[in-house]
Length: 400
Image 1 (cartoon, one colour):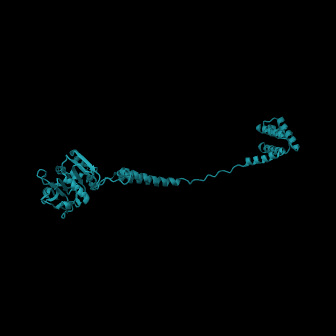
Image 2 (spheres, rainbow, N blue to C red):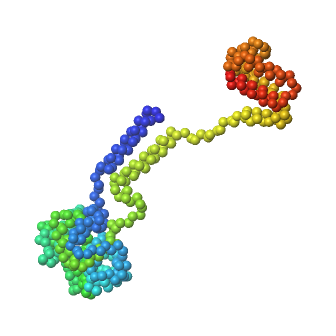
Image 3 (cartoon, rainbow, N blue to C red):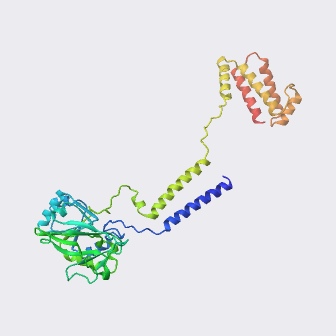
């Protein structure tokens, strides 16, 4: 890898690290998703309201499934509490819910949109009021009861449409709260109904068309928490509160085990950085590695096997003389190449030279070649003579 290549890689890694730093350090955008979940601390979560309700209510039971399932199990007495941007109650579920209310129980529903037959059953019609002479729409709310009514209306500082009940059954239903778009002096001069109580059998149904009043941002704005506390005055907190978690758009549904990583911005970018690093490692490290080289075994030395084969042939024929001659030839070859001595003339000078160039005595050298001369003169030799020749030659080589 040359120097310029290393510089390019270093700049790329530095740029990647800088981009990750910018992404991790920029402020979180405000999340205005209407989750209404008691675990969410976002503006439209209900974390603060649920904490306060837990301190005042004697018993709160979360309901994760449809009311139809819970009411089929003979739910005990109490108040079923719904908060959502939209509530859809089908006919079978509505029959179960109304039968439970008739026994003397209470249902509280706060929603922007009521779908299904609930409004038809209660003879109620819902509408929306939109600001026409301004770009922003800030509704104001208040209660009707003089003991709970505030001098100044409570205002939504965040832009939203106003949902209200246009027609109600005034003979049987009670108006508990009113609202309208922001007017001067924080006084609602043309009230629109947004909070009612409808008796049903021995129980009652409370409907509120502004679920945002239970949100974190509304309760933390000025003294708006007082309005929420006054709304709770219509609920018997001594009974069990059945907190609905089924209809909330912010209910937790995990579809992947990676939700833990992606739910945290820092873990998410650490995950991305690991993936990018792994890709870079494979790309650059793979270029440095050679392809696997096939192992080729060296050619096997067959000299030893060949010699054994030839020697075996001579032994099978019992041709001791031929084997002796081979050993003598090999000895002479050894003297010529290893000792650099001419073997053309074997005489006293030859014996003296071998004795000087080896550790053998002159008499031992002469005795060896005298024995070799006897072997060469015989047409045949015995096995014992062959072994004796082999020992003498081996002794000579060991002393060389």
